[in-house]
Length: 360
Image (cartoon, rainbow, N blue to C red; front, side, top):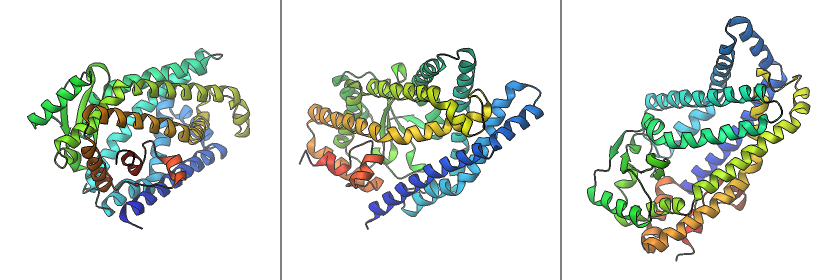
């Protein structure tokens, strides 16, 4: 088994184990009554009841992190170093973990507060109101991510290669894409993988190049990569994904609305409005995510193929596209030709060989 296959196989295995491990922890936490015990204990300890939800979320988040730490540590730290994909020190890795945990906690707190507030004040159509709020919040988050969240983990600076910057700006103008500027980030401090992105919404849209890509790829290869990213915008793929994910969100909350009473009774709970029912809601999210992931992956792969097609039509750089794909596969240890079942469940992009073969 070559290095890329070995790396990918371990990633798939860890993902499967992690998913079912998380599901088992949630079921145990709810079925044993620990969730109810924690809720009652916090109401007894905290005189201000509005503090119970953040305290409950903090306790279960910390408990989950500790229980999941061995898998997380191996998958995101040891495995990357084992395959020479990262030189990050443990202290820097753990610092990123803390920052990611704080960001995730704040986002989760906002969404869960909104969930319980709407549930209490709109008992008949809460599922629709919550869906709309979550969709709106995801759009706000997409706009703020390049401004607030990415700088927490990477250092931004304007792209120093002025020739490359001018080339990217001309490409954006040619493809009728408005961006505020081109930036590079210090990706190499965390990983040796390569990446580029077109992020943000509205006035926050910008190009981000990882230094691991900028320093190792030709200008033609970088142009093809960004033509692909700009094609997503030109073909309105972002909005298609928003519509798809919004539909999934609405269906999920409607499913909870219609079936939760039966599920809650099996766990000895009476209502979704109980804080102790939160693990049940998370179980819904986990199982529904597993069920819809293949469909989401299939839809995403279709969009990626269309973006590849437009990128090649705009640039005409077939050789640069092929060389860029081969470099990415080697640098990122990509599984070039996965088993169909693996592709079905895990791949939201077409495998590298599939992206190259129609061009040769």
